[in-house]
Length: 453
Ligand SMILES: Cc1ncc(COP(=O)(O)O)c(C=O)c1O
Image (cartoon, rainbow, N blue to C red; front, side):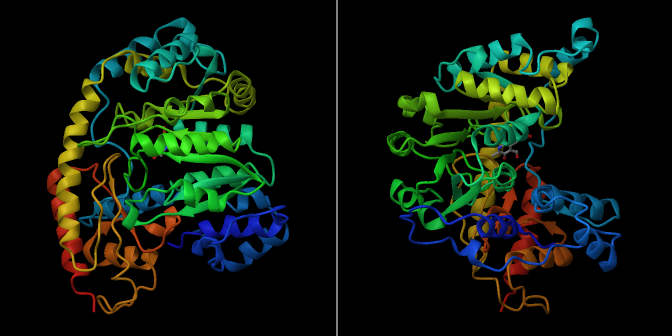
C-alpha cells in the first residue's frame, strides 16, 4: 500500500512562489523525494484513471488527498481477519475499552428528549460548551469562556476547521515530524504548506526552538504543537513547552495545539498546555481536543476547538454550512463524560502504562530495532531502519511500507509504516489491544525481523 504524503507536499511546493525570504537551511529529506505513483483504486483500470485525470473528474485539491494510512491498515487487517487469517492488528488508534456505562446511559436518555431531536446551535449545545470551558480549566488550567468553544464532529473536524479558519494560500505551518497523518492533508486542503521539522529517536522525538527557528520564514503563520504525540508518544517537558510557546509569541505565530491525549501520560511525565505555559499566546492559540481517547468514545464523534472569540465565531460559521450541529445525542453523552470524573481514563491509563513498558522492552530486544519509551498516548514508534534493505523471507523491502506489507504477509501482524507520519524507517504500533495479543504479535514480529540478513 503506497503512502503518498510526499504527493501533496510536492504539489503544493511546486505551485507556490518561493518564500520572500527564508532562513531555512535544511529541507526535510521526505519532501525532496519524487512523489511515488498514486495507487490505483480497486476496480478501476488504467483507462478509467486516465480518463478521470484528463477530464478533471476529481478536483486537484481533493485528488491530492490520500486515504488515511492508519484507517487503511486497520481495514486491511480486519478484512484478512474476517477471511480467517490470525491477524494481530497494531494499526488502530483507539482504546480497546468500551465507553463507560454511565455515558452510554446518558445517551439513551437523551434520545427521548424532544429538544435533542431537532437542530441545535452549530457551535454546540450551550450546556456542553459551558462544561468544556469548566473541564479545560480543571484539567489544564486554561481559563476560557464558553463562547470560545466550538463543538465539532470529532477532533478531526476541529483540526480541519482550525486550519481552514486560519490559513490562506501560501501560508506555511511548522509541523514537527513524525506527525499525525491527518495534519498535512488538512493544511494542504486549506491552501497552506506544511513544513515538517524533523526529529528522531535520538532526541526522544522532541523538537527544539533552534530547529523550529531554522524553518521559520516570512510566510510562517502557524506552529502545530502536539504533546503527547501521535505517533511517537513523546511528551514535552514543561520548560520546553514554555520555551517554544514564548518563541512562537515573540515571532507573532499562531499556535494550534492538539491536546487530545492530555490524560494519557505515564511515569514522571506531566501534560502541559502551551496556552498556559505561554499565556501571552492567548490571542493566537487554538486548542484542539475531544472525548475519543479519554473516555473510549472514538465512534461517538465529538471533539472541539477552543479559540479566540473571533476565530471561534468564524469556525462556527464554517461549520454552520458544513455539518450544522454535531449529533445532539452524542453531545449529551460528551456532556456527561466531560462533567464527570476521570476514573475511567485512570483505569485505561494503568493498562496502557503496563503495555507500553512490555511492548518497548520486547521491541528493543529485536536486533536492529530501537524504541524510546513513550511517555504518553498509546503508541510505540520504533526505528527499524537497520532492517530496511536487508533480505527477509526471500524479499528485500526497500522502505518501511514494503516491510510492513511483508510483515503482514508473513506473520499476520499489522503495523503502520513510518511513511504515513512523514518519517520512513519507523513503524507505529498501538498498545491499545489486549496483553496476550500484544505479546503474541510482538513475538511474531521479533522472530521474523531477527531473520533479516
Ligand atoms: C493527535 C490526534 N488528534 C486528533 C485525533 C482525532 O480524534 P477524533 O476525530 O477521533 O476525535 C486523533 C485520532 O487519532 C489523534 O491521534
